[in-house]
Length: 210
Picture (tube, one colour):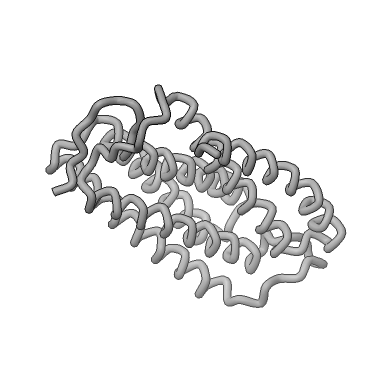
């Protein structure tokens, strides 16, 4: 099976899996773990559909050609993995705080302050890694597509960081929490998009592997 086939099949299966998971979420009284799992599965589907769209726009099934230096490609892969951890920890933050449900909803029992600062530290780590990658992309005169994708991601990250800190220090109003979740989804999509922009198919290119 091709990458495109894998992507749409897994996206379809993930969408179908949301139905019983949604039922479990309701039956468990909006248990924060069930709610968080519902969100994380949605983000997996976002990644899969982003891959599907990118793959559908490629001109052929020729071997993958990496268009950036090998070190940059590895750095982007590390950033994508780190972003996955950030999303999981972010889910734990919400599941431990006031927006995990109403007064009857069980919380995870984690210290909201501790888990929030861990989440913030991971985000700062990702921003630092991304800034370094952007410098490397410009220094090596990488193609415009990954450089532009990294710039857009950095802007979204900085906006998310501002919203996150305002949210934390203003008592986590639900409107800012909603904006924070929306931006998290956008950042995850942009991260996957950056990863995909470091390679291509079917177009003659010289990979920089030095």
